Image 1 (spheres, rainbow, N blue to C red):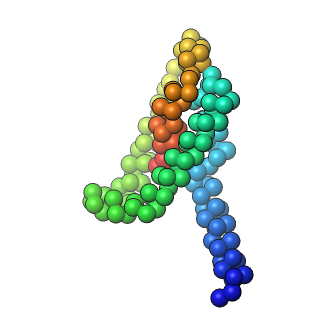
Image 2 (cartoon, one colour; image 1 turned 90 degrees about the vertical axis):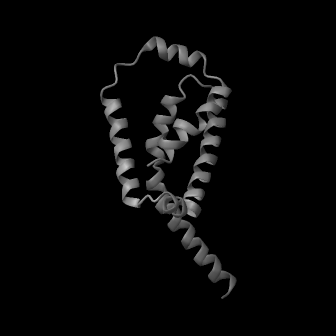
Image 3 (tube, one colour; image 1 turned 45 degrees about the vertical axis):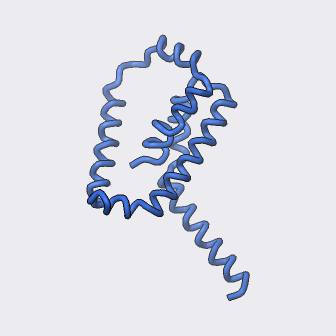
Length: 136
């Protein structure tokens, strides 16, 4: 094969993978959640947090791609059970959102004042990376 053939195959595979991942990760739906969970943070803190979340998502996807099947078979878990568990997690989160009380303005103000880069680092994996950005 010539170099042009390799580049064409790589380019087609790259765009196919990108077209597969975009609906799965759903950036337009994650952006408002990210903004609401980082309310009160400065733009530089949000930028650092977004970079950490992106790195965490990439690492989680690579680990799931390389070792996901091995881990599931090691623990004796079938893929259908994972789907049911993910659905139950989504249902529980939705139920909590539906039954949540109105926004407590005092709590939001307190959270906005105390949002520091250390707090951003603590939230980089849970809940922003898993389960919101790269979850069930």
